Structures are given as structure tokens and as C-alpha cells.
Image 1 (cartoon, rainbow, N blue to C red):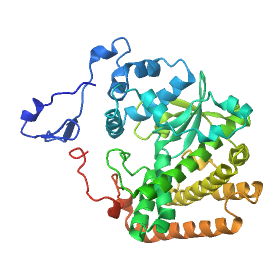
Image 2: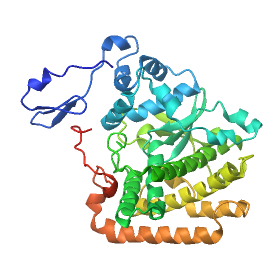
Image 3: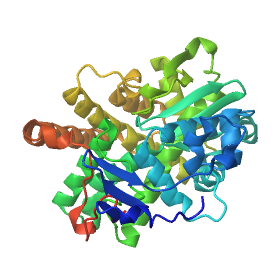
Image 4: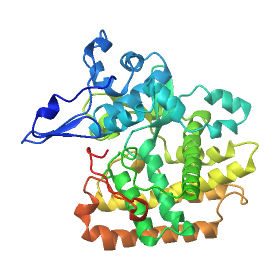
Length: 402
């Protein structure tokens, strides 16, 4: 996208320069102009192509409008998750600003986490998985999904899921790094608001905290390990032959991406509880040649499942009739004990450690619900941002500062 001269608009007495473009108070609301695209750059691709133009290259749009490979279908899933969310478009404009030749597909190729999991598989299993497109997408139901496309299966891991795990890790381990109770509580609050859909998805634009480097390395590293388990779980469904058409369901994309306004449907796999338990175990079992990585992934699995348990308590409290992808999975505590029973006793947290951690998390969550959410329900459900006050020195003004 070329730089746009907004000087003519600034002659309006109600106009104000923003971080991206300008903001105009029309009297009936705020209008934010933050860019423009040339119709001529997308000739021949149809009118819908222009909706993707702000955050996609022409090559991206061609693939989205006419996907020819499984990788193209993963790109389409990624783009559809952004297109109807103005704030996410701003997030990707921020990401785009750091590139000379921007492409959404190339961005994700660079940003997808190092495929550690694939490095520690047998050659046979590696060969079966190496061509399965997998990586992050901004599906804002906090989950991972394996979908079937006409050209093969693709795996997408929710970016908000990664952010959720990151803030839960700050809450759970923050005391070890001198992060006080108030900041840890806010990290827990951010995580629960993320999973419930109330926290604004603009972490690139407005970071909730800037942690000391050593703390950031630990929290990001642990989040990466948990990501490897989630990816390994989805890969295990492939390796175990769980991807039967009998397990396919078709879901309107609006049930996976809040605010989506189109008719795009996603065919994805829904598994029995037994198949989910098997995928948990084999995500660890399939790891070869590195005992430390296997142990780390086992603990990453236990932590992620404990976190999901307390968040299911929060979701059940605020919406007892909820129906989400997460609710189709077995109870996370059952998954923990099934996994613990099948793993080598030398791997991961032992039963006493798990029992103590689960007890702490459930007790904390009950207090959170009974003493905070019960008296601050409107604040909990208010769309916006929560910060770690000791690690956010300056509060920024939306659109003007970011």
C-alpha cells in the first residue's frame, strides 16, 4: 500500500490526526480513515477481493479467491478470520509496516513457530506430516482446529490461544519472578477475558505489559512448549488415522470467528473422547530422541489442561448454555489423569504435584468468580483492554497513540 496524503481531510474542523490515518467526528459517530487501496491493483479478482486488499498482496488474494493447494486453504482460513474485524485489520497493518514486500502468506511462514515438534519424530512420522500445512491463525475461539479442504487437511492454532497461555503462565509462575499479586491477578483476568471474547485482540498495537527480558524469555518459552503439545495433539490425530469423514462436521465460520459476516463454512473434525485421550498420549509418545523435550511437552500439556479446566469454570459461570469447540472436548481434568496414567512415571508432574496445582487453581478460580466476577460482571464483560499496571508505564489512547 502506498502512503496516503490525508491533508485534505484534515481541513475538516472535526478531524484529528491518528496513529494510522485520521479520525473524524461526524456527529453521528467516529469515522477512522486509515488507508486506501487501488482498484486497478485487483482487476479481474472480483469485488470481494477488495475486502482482503488492505492486509493481503495481490498474490495472496488470487490464492484466497481460487485456492489450489492445502496451503492456499490455510491462507484462506487466516484471511477470512481477519477480514470482518476492523481492529484485526489494524493489527495486520501494523505487522505489514515492518515489511518492504508484504504478503500475508510470507508473514505467516516467517512467524509460525519453529516446528520443534516435527524435529523429534521418527523419520516415518515426519514424512507423513511434513506436508500438512499447520500454524497460527487469528481464529478467536481459543482452540486449535483441523479442517478438511478439497486439497488436504490443514491445522490452525488460535493466536488468542497462544496469548491466553502466555498470560496464564504469568499468573501461575509470576510469583517466582517477583511479580506481585495485583499484576498476577490482572494476568489471570486478561486470560479469562480472552477466552470469553471480551479482551480486545490488539496486543501488537497495545501490549498489556513489557516484562523484564529474563521473565519474557521464560514465559514465551513455556508458551512455545505448550504450543508444541497442542500442535502434537493435532498431528497425532493424523498419525493415528482419526481423520475419517465420519468425524467431519460443517460449521459456519461465524461460530469460530466472532464478528464474521460471510457465508464461509469450515469442514472440521470432531472426535470422540477416546480419540482425544489417545491424541493427548501419543503427542508425547511420538517424541523420539530427546527426553528433556518429551518431559517439557508433558508438563506443557498438564499446565495447558489445568488452565483450560479453570477457564471452563469461568465460561460455565458466565454462560451456562454455552456451545463452543472447547465444550466438545472431554473434561480437562479427566484428560490430565488419563494422560498421567499412561505416561512413564519419570515424565512430567507426579500425581501429588498435579493434585496440589489443580486444587490451587480451582480454589483461586472459585474466589475469582465469587468475589470478583459476581460483583463486577459488567466490568468483566466490557470490551476493551486490561493491563499489568507495574509493567505498563503509559496508557495509550486508542487510534491516536496506536
